[in-house]
Image (tube, rainbow, N blue to C red; front, side, top):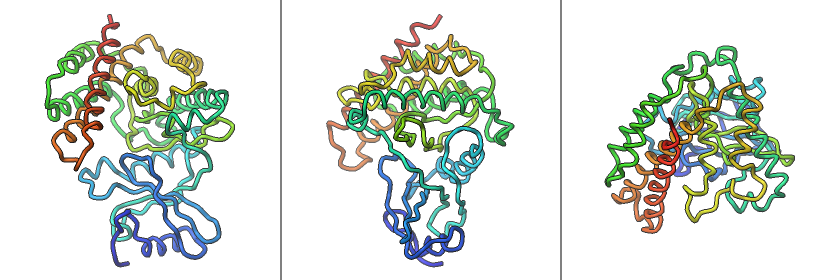
Length: 342
């Protein structure tokens, strides 16, 4: 095989050969990038007979291969195939970079919708959006209830100390990237570091679980959970808190969130639904909410610093300011939640 990936990350000729050998296709393949993802690249692949698949590969020019490990994602989705957590069926994994410039895997195409924006959510019947929210919570509780050994992921990652490791990692990241004084971030870190709840067993942490990272059915059910690149083992209540924190409009400013549309369950209902489906104690949820807001503040500050330094190209000053203001809002929310801790 010769050649390399195009600017869009697809070597059509090489992939045509790979699909013919490993999948079986009719005629010439067409590739279309699925927009919306912020890291790994995802493409719809279709043949002349109407067959469709999804190909996922790392971003172009990425530096940290471990952050975009295709074999890792492939293993997770394969392990969940018969778990009751809806995931796409896996077709194959290719680790030979000569084929497409980077490892990739192929999975089945799932029919459904991604409710990505407030406009997408508002266009739905509120009752349907409500069913979607409830289904999301039910699937998350099911994921967290899985026996990691029984599904073959017992050795996937370290089992204990998840929150402690995250606190250490993101504090270091914040200190390396911050270009301004935001004392609340370090103050919240100190408060959280001395109050980490005991981890209630070990479960599968999705790492980025939310409405727009799932494919939804027309009846409101979850057709497939997507974007497993941050998945690990650890304290699953971080997932629940992150799902709630993502939907907090106060951190988004003037940009309305998909979960702010009429019909989507409010935070209190999400907690109640999860509690009714899980045996885990939610008494320390304020800790996890503080952690979720704090972690996102650290991440977004890194983005803001890169925009401020001009390394993201000709950035819109208003966009740069939006990132900067969001960090401050997230730090305030983290401090508010942390302030309720004993």
